Image (tube, rainbow, N blue to C red; front, side, top):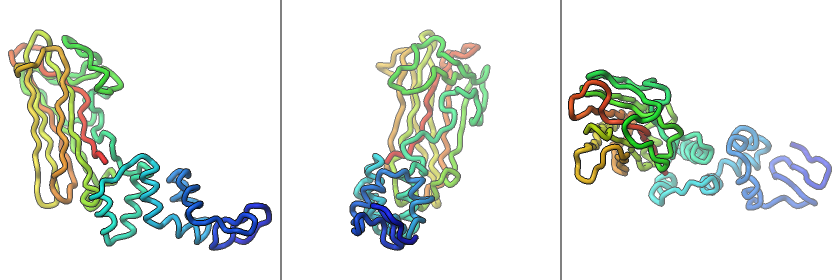
Length: 278
C-alpha cells in the first residue's frame, strides 16, 4: 500500500506513520489486542507485510489469549512453545482467543431434554424414558445448576439409558490438538429421586484415544446415606489424565426406580455435561 496524505499514513511494509514516525511494534500490538480475532485473521493480516508479520508472531497471540480471558497453564504453554509445527501453534492460539475451539463450553447437545430425546440414542425399559418440562415429585432444579429451563429426563421401573457420542475432530479438536493443550475434562450431571420412590442413576463416560480406551463411572442412589428424596444432587468428576490422541467421547446415562412401580418413578437427570476446561 503506497503513501497517503494526512496525519496518519500507511506505508508499504512499515505499518502506520504519524507525523513521519512509524508506530512502534509495541503500540501496534496494543491496538490489535482490541480488534476482534475474526477481523485480525481474515482482513487485518492482509493489509501489508508489516502487519502480517506482527500477526503471525506467537508472542502476540499468547498475549491475545490472555486478553480474551484464557489463562494457559504453564505446562500447556511449554508444550506450545516446544511444538515443531509453528502453523499448528498459530491456529491453536487463534482458535482459543477467537472461540473457534469449543473450550469451557458444554459439548453435550440437548443436555436436559429441552429438545425431547433428540441427539440421544435411547433404550427404553419399563414404561420408557420421558422428558418432563418441570420435575414432578421433586424440588425444582436449583438455580446453582445454571440451567435455562426445568426440563429433565425421567426413567421408569425397567432400566432406561441414553447415549451420545462426541466426535472431537468434527468440532475442531483433532487428537494432536488435544495432546498439545491437554485441557481438563469436566463431567457432571444433576440427579434427583421422587419424594415417594427411591431410584438410582449411573453415568459411564468412555474416552477413546488412538491406542487405548478409558472408562469413567459415577453412581448415585437415593438410598445412600445423607441423600434426601426430592432434593437435587450433582454428580461430577474432573479428569486431567486420559488417553493420548483422544478422538471420541461417549456419554451414557442409565437409571431406574428401585420399587418396580409402573409409570415414571425413576431417577430424574438434567444438565449432562462434558466440557474441556482451560
